[in-house]
Image 1 (tube, rainbow, N blue to C red):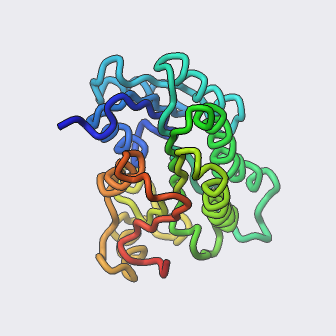
Image 2 (image 1 turned 90 degrees about the horizontal axis):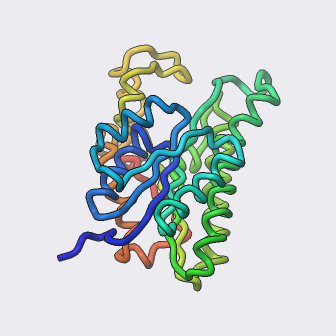
Image 3 (image 1 turned 180 degrees about the vertical axis):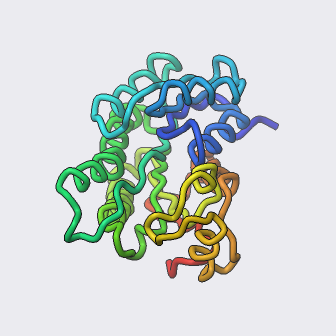
Length: 258
């Protein structure tokens, strides 16, 4: 029995650690060739060494806040592997946490470029290649915060809501072209980043306290894992996921109401 992504090529932003790294590893294990992107050259090379997938994984450096980088990632992928079948727009995150009255124009613009603009530009560039071929999968990693609101992260929350709306609209434009577009909305995810940072937005410093706070209202009472997210990304990327499009799928352990 063949692997689910045999002959497929994927590009993944923020692909050297956390959710992006787990997706990259799962895609490679299922037969795909992958280009991972990150801002840090050293971390990128380390990720390639650790994945040990030879010429099946390449690294493209740069910050997706820059239009030239996100568009260059698509060009680089096609130049090296001949095609682009799967685009995973995983990079993004919270900048400085602050109430709206203290939020600067510069911080607002940074979060816009890092989150929504990165997804828009990556999707647009990928579609320029996918539409003529009448095939493709685009997966944006959004957040449970794109389905609710939380104090002191208004920029991040606004961007994630916008990403989910963007996905729904864009999916309707290309659904008859063999292309699906979805977003995955994780809740708290157990990653190395969680272990290495405090809960700044909540004023907590201990990882256990952060986990307890953000999982107390979930059904499973624990963070989701990167493996659980990558498993669903594989479904969306494969032929088995052809019926999913325009979805904003909550992978949050049962927190969101939809």
